Image 1 (tube, one colour):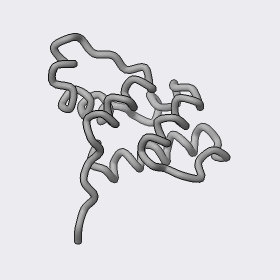
Image 2 (image 1 turned 90 degrees about the vertical axis):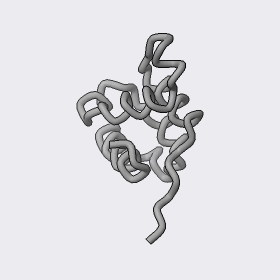
Image 3 (image 1 turned 45 degrees about the vertical axis):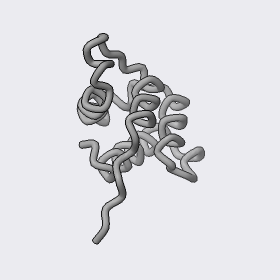
Image 4 (image 1 turned 60 degrees about the vertical axis):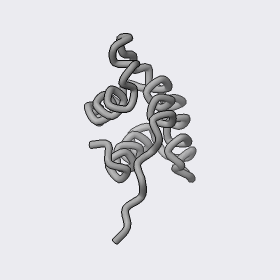
Length: 89
């Protein structure tokens, strides 16, 4: 069974920025590791603190479709599931 390759560091960095996560300069030099760590640490509660717009834009970067009509709660759950599916958990 083949597994999809994880998103590139650019996509993960963009999602991190959209969700308002910030890192210090040292972390930014190691963007892939820092981004994966920050995104993996996001609980459903953390995601629900984001705006719906932030979640929609981030979901778009992950390639999720058909999410614009979801409630914020369901959108956050789908986003979290998608992050786990690409290996960020």
